[in-house]
Length: 309
Image (cartoon, rainbow, N blue to C red):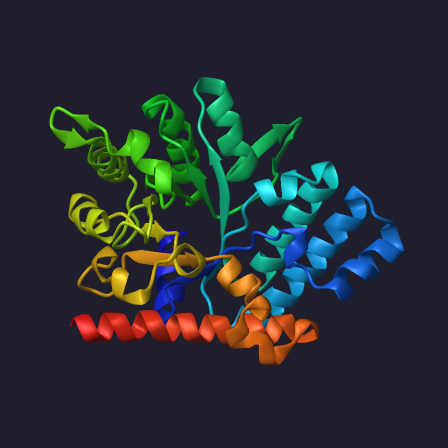
């Protein structure tokens, strides 16, 4: 799957991923009203609104982008109906030949970690059948419990030719409370980066490993260091746009081949119609606003990479 992701990034010239992280207040009134008319102001109604919102954004952007990243918490808050909307979204995106990164941030040990890995990336044994459940292409993984929590995911990745992105240096302001702590004189995130490189050594695609890393756009200097520590790991870069990251901040996340990183934007794209810059589209045409935001993001990153050469 890392080979497919790389190929799609090269084909689209768009090293970006759209974060499908819908909150109800992102969803235009006409979408909500139609869903509530059919299902009432219920969990089912909220899930239907989310699904219709996602579908329109995907329909308007899928030809421009290589991948999407649904954040499962935004669906879980609506219970089982929300998870059903998550699954419909995953399946629909895959039908459009998009790579799906399940932003699930799971991290546990032993059989629990194995169950997470099977549920999201693998196939579960049911009698004589092996069945894919959520069936994303990649998943985000929290490494805080050590190798015991990560290796079950790697085992499934090898079997299914799928991948993971391990949290190394996250984009949130308080990430340094733990991630920047010095261990033998070095920040913890560097040691985690070294483990990512090690885990990925026997899990290689053509040029990049199936084991990638999450490194926030809000810490470009740290990204520069981690790029060198993990030369064969694809870096998933959150924090662009709404969190302050810009194209010029991202140059050092990429390798000299122009690959090696994929940049996420969530509300900056899916709620673009709320921004003054895209206000001309109006609420009814929110999908067109999202498409324009994608085009602007592609241009920003492409311009920054060319300027750095």
